[in-house]
Length: 103
Image (tube, rainbow, N blue to C red):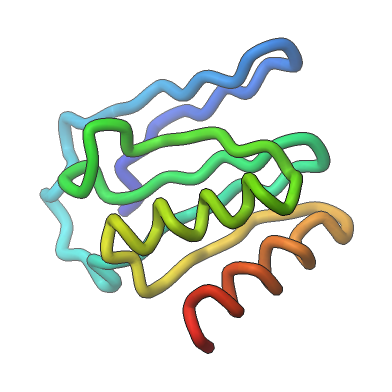
C-alpha cells in the first residue's frame, strides 16, 4: 500500500498532500524503495517517511539536479527506485541514477 492519498502538482508550484494515518499498517515489500515522478521540467522524489525530515523533494530536470537527487537517495539508504514517466524524460534520470548506484 502506498502511503500517499493524493498528489497535486499545479503548474506554478508543486505541492504534495499526505495521508500518513495508515503509514506502516501494511508490510513493506521493499522498505528501502523510493519513487520518482518524472516530468519535463521537474522530478518529484519521495522516500520513506522515517529517512529524512523532508520525505518529498522536487528537483529540476537538469543534470546537476538529477545528481543531487541521486545523493539524496544515497543519504536515505535507498536501494530501489520506481519511476513514473510519460515520454522520454525518464532516460537521463535512469542513466544518472544507474551510474551513481553502480548498477
